[in-house]
Image 1 (spheres, helix red, strand yellow):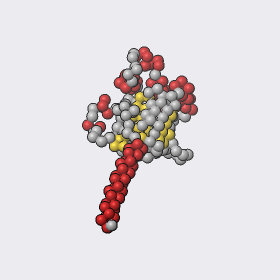
Image 2: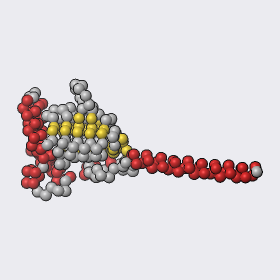
Image 3: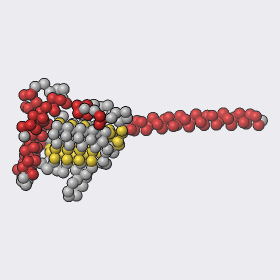
Length: 228
């Protein structure tokens, strides 16, 4: 237990340049408070208790603005930056070294029983306001852009942006060969824009068509001139 607490504190210093001292982190980081309270609630939940773990969860939500259901399974190195508005559902499974920002929802899509929330792989970064919904799997080393809505499985080593979320492979970057510190890519502002790329492709295609039409018109004019 104490090893996990030390690790939960360590990841804050590793990933948040604003963290200046141990006392500041312990007293002023709601993400740390939320995960510590969740680990207690989850332990009691696995023992078969229902009301007490939910009370701890509700107290944590009141204290931190972060709601984590006691049934959610969360691995080591989990970091919630800022955290207000974060919601994590009952059957969510989160791997190791995952980072999420404020406003993220890991939720369900209906009233079905059983596994109905996402499974998040290792070294995943989920940016502010993103929604990951349903019983889907997010592959290792994935980065989800701010405001994205992810409704389908994503393969490892990809970036997801848009509504609904679209997968964009990171070309020329083999994340699997990096060391652990490099794997956790927190530059969630540097994301491709598939809509803008599509518009550029359309503009290039229109330009080629206009050039082709111009060439055909010139050819037709020369033919008409010779015919006269």
